[in-house]
Image 1 (cartoon, rainbow, N blue to C red):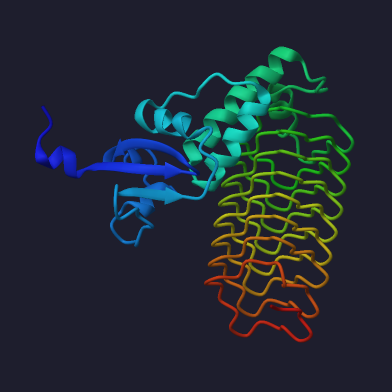
Image 2: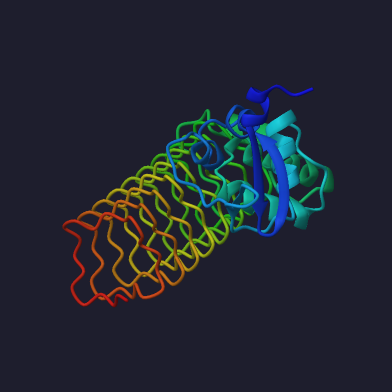
Length: 302
């Protein structure tokens, strides 16, 4: 029999029409820095059904049971590649970095088993970076796990880096010119002063990454996640940020001249002293964004 205190900790959730019941401990303990933990920390007002007490979240509820099971048990479910892609997008939205890392590890292991055709292994990379000057220009490194390595100053220009796992790697001053890094994971990586000019980063995860003074001019950043990323003084001229998630990102002093920001999420972002002249912001989500000192001359706004 449940005590009154147990009942008071119960949370009823309506995720896009699907109903779930869980506890505050489940939502806050395993991933204390997640959006779900923040929602139920007591610091925020929630959208709650007054009749039945359900908290509504406007997301697809298809994979939310997997998210709850992760929060309860720390187990990554067995899914198809497309299922993992959908779950990754939800984990990214809820800022569940542990689950993101778990999914990436599973996918990398699966890709190793399927042989993606990468020309080098993680061990080969470790041996290479012990030399003074390292270049992987034009090399196929698809699917490799290069997390937590010191890859600073490495030249990856023109390489195929699809679905590479760079989480927490030190990539300061690395060169990624014209790389194909679609779907790669860079969360919490150090990317200060990196060069990404002309790179394809569609769907890449850069949440929490340090991209201070990075050069992302002409890069394809469609559907990328930069949640909480440090993009101070970054060069984003003519970059395509369509549907990118930059919620809470720090873009102070960034240059966004000519950038495409259609349906981009900049809620709560710091855009102080950013260069936004003549940028079309009509379909950009700017709720709570800081725009003090931003250059908005000629910018198209709602």
